[in-house]
Length: 374
Image (cartoon, rainbow, N blue to C red):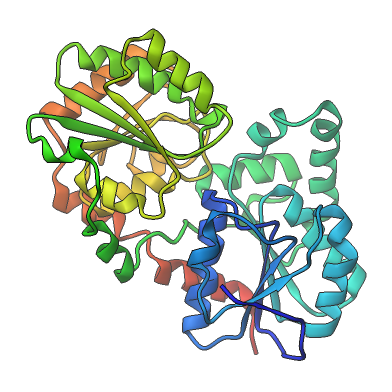
């Protein structure tokens, strides 16, 4: 990744992120940025600060602008100056605080830049995790500022419904654009080798989970359900990701005497290679905006089981057609769904076909409809 200084260059599209942390929203933004750059558009990636696991996957065709500031809100004057100097035709932001800052910057810069804010999680759940003050202020900021956005995007129907509820805006002002997951390049990553002996044992079924080790992913329910499945089947569990809940999860594994059966490899640059080799992927989130890993696993032809959380999984899996859905926190139900999928997995070809519907090209076309380029 090369970082450029703010030299004179007119920009078509700018993407705003705090950093390149390893979250789903960041990956989506980088995919969109790279996709538009491949089409010959001049694309900037504006970062409040450098850092994060995704630095290596930034397209070389995307210019990176580092505002070099420790906090998002106090970087606002720098973003205003960027908009005045480069006057991008479009500024796309993701995640709640960045969305409000992007709208404020456009108002203060008084440029013709179209601001498109994208929401990647149900806002009500996100606010519940915040401090008492932020819980009160954030909905007010959304109600005040979102009407000034030129376009609003939600990554699922459920997220869009939630935006309308919190913002008070008409539902038809909010656009559904599913996350861009499938690209031809992704298929190559499935074939890469994985240095994991459990995949070599044909008698063992590897269950995979991928995500930040945080409370909203509810990995304790997965581990408890896995313990029930383990009583009947020779299974192993791999949880990819890093986060603040690692020590608590490791302690739970010890308490359930599963130390030899559960692995935490941390963040890996190519989780897709694991997906293609696992017996199934399980997602146990309390809430999601979309559920990228469900689509990624489906593209690999790997069966999936998911909680029926807000929002996304039921839309991706078409209410259970492409994978079992269970209630959030239902450990026995989750174990039963895993066992059922081990016995009768979904047709891999149907899963691949479904996964490929969520393509980068489809997302790019829908975003371009919002640009209003002359």
